[in-house]
Image (cartoon, rainbow, N blue to C red; front, side, top):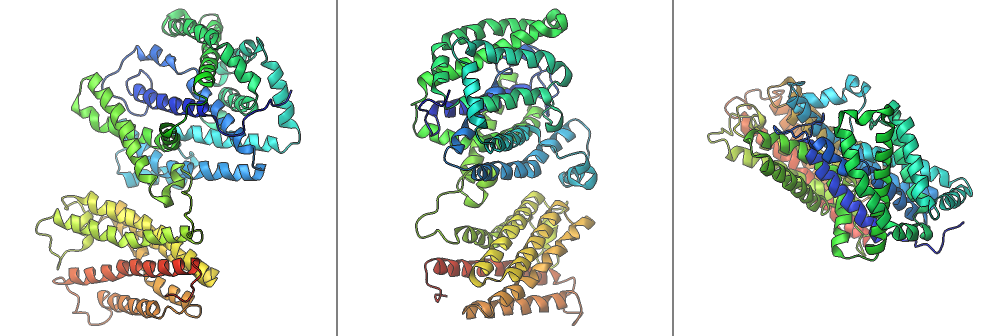
Length: 592
């Protein structure tokens, strides 16, 4: 049996189901803060009845998401080769996974460690605990991102299967026969019952890829099920026809399942009756949702769906970090449970949506939040990514200056002549987070700008070595800036800031790259003046000449001058190179 006149574009009903399932997931995680389970952070309120109430969605929600994800992958393969499909999946899934594991999850795990009394250091100490050689030996925690890990691996496996000629067609034909007519009720159910009885008691659910065999049979099975049958129209027609039957069976199975979970005798007969009822509810709910969705939502499109589909992945990435931190901050207020729960729901959805609204407008960070790159307007097809990185270079000095000015404004009596800027981030400062946060972000922006400088040099001159060296110097400088903000002065580790001084070499490297290839005379003079000025200030502030010129009474002013030149030139150079790239992309290489 082959695919029967199936659509080749995405389906609105599956989009609605995916959005709703992720919305339920967020509510489910809020409920876990009150449930009698070992979750990351708990409210002061705990409700035993949630042990049974969570069974409303627990058996089927994630399995349904895996099925829908497999279906989405099938639509991707219609007009793409396996290699292109694999690349598209990697570009969509790997950046958020890496970003989440390095940035979002450590915030959760640090809050949990502090909350449960297992850790007493600061966040920088926690990062070292997680990502030091000994920490990495225990693996990188991914928390809720385990779902992204599994989707990535399942996608790779499935795409690999498509490279075997005829395999997908034969598997689809077999599965279509196996689910035709009354078999659509029985065959998936038997599969779910067997793996629940045989594998679940042995392996349980660990959410660890290397030892989660029941979950793989369940979730990979659902993924392949959706992949193989999404374009088989008789399958959907059968689900629609039997949707009321499935919904009725689910409504009958749910209270029985809850009773088995709450009653001391629910696990009798080796838990086999409970496993059977669990599987019945699981498949009946999935089939009912798919059937009703196919019947009523397949043509339900509009701006709301477009917005929600785009927002779902960023909300998924952000929500658990937002929730964990929100519980930590709200719990001391001792709010009544209903007020606290509603507050957590509102904060989790609201802040996650705010994050989405911000990141979707910043092209350079869209990929790490699971968003597709923005379409390139006509006339900007060349160098648009390089230029956006250079825009970050223009913004970095502004951000650093803003952090300094706000930090000074919060510290009445701060003495510019005798105090170092680093003191704005020290323990004596009234608001050290402002300065340290600004410096940390500026360090990250410096690294991004360095990549932009390197790519710009390569685009304009073809020089690979000088481009790589330029980017490397900026990246080291950015690491130094960010690290110094994590370890405020007088912590000895604050001296990682010295890595930032390597940016003094960047003007020379840019001169090297531009010297013989372009006619940017004013930029070359500017870079040379900047390098000489920084060299002179280095000699003076290190007391290598005129040792009395820099002293305790004026050291702050010298440092201010050094910092302005050290950081400020980057924005000017980025602006000039951005103009050059714009002119170059427009076919006017002589415009300076």
